[in-house]
Amino acid sequence: MKIAFATTDEKNINDHFGRAGMFAVYDISKDGSRFVEIRKFADGEDTSITSTREQGQVHEDLVQAKVDRLSDCRIVYLTEIGGPAAARLVKKGMMPLKVKEVTAIDDALAQLKATISGSPPPWLRKAMNTE
Image: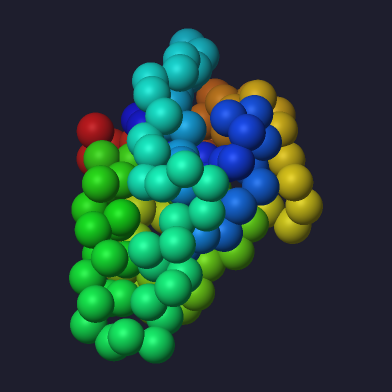
């Protein structure tokens, strides 16, 4: 199952979904995890989204394009996400997971692997079965 992490440094979950210029994508299973790729949307902040907030459909289309590029990921870790963007992820069968503070991607992967190996909650079992 693929997981995306909103990151500015490829090491930590430390960015807002809309602002994130890149996402680190990993594949995870009960056996472990492996880095897949960096999905880059911008160098630094994704200003195409942040600068169009008041532009209605233009903004909505850009947010949807980001969601679509990440749609093969079942979980997206981030620090913040707006309600409409979160709803778009869920509609695509993706689960947005907010971290309360900057978290190392390796730590999140270890925690998720332990959850998968144990007794995952229903939403995670469902996400794992859609692969």
